[in-house]
Length: 314
Image 1 (cartoon, rainbow, N blue to C red):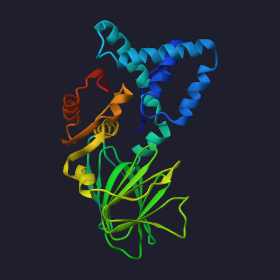
Image 2 (cartoon, rainbow, N blue to C red):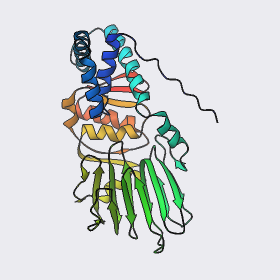
Image 3 (cartoon, rainbow, N blue to C red):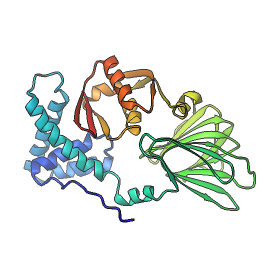
Image 4 (cartoon, helix red, strand yellow):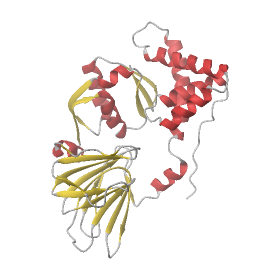
């Protein structure tokens, strides 16, 4: 199948380039490499430095638009420009090869969709929103490659063939169990609801495997390695399998990250101080926009909709 995709044209002027850098740094996905590249761009000339300062000031003004009296025409003008620049960075985040890899996954769900499947060995999987995985069984072992998203596993017993979920640099080996694996851009989180699993990574000591018990959770990132295992409410973690999403005194930044998984487009938080505001509630995952409206009313914050795909909280 011939897959073609239209991309926005990159900005050409110095001011537009500066705005693109500011938008990227505030997208919530900027890496240390992005920040270093931005600093190098600013050092090209004094004009580059000044353009970046002006763009950062404009972004700050947009963040305070809800608390200041500004003309609607000006807000719409800058909103449209920032929306265009964000679209540029949005489509550039995942390389095309990664997109093709996800498109050809054995099993996948769209944003806001869930799916259940039974593997050939009788193991049952539940795929959460925006998830992609591959399955590879052999006479020696059963491998599931979680490429993106989140999946719950209820593993059928087969002592002769270990069941291993691989994601990024981690391997989670079932020990007769039910568990959930979630992979993000820079981390993997494993939660056990029944029995136990063994987790490992290239830097794990082979002499002391990490065993995660029922009701425990652990996370891994390439720069920090494995976190300490800690107790969690596995029922709450698995609420998405019942169509719910539960927040118990969670910071707004983490809440928005979760809501973004269930809706098209992206929610941005303009004011960093808002990220720490606590959120508690039970919401329906099939209506994330309704959940967002309730959260806004509860916290006394507002939003600015730039397009169907970009929404700013301030």
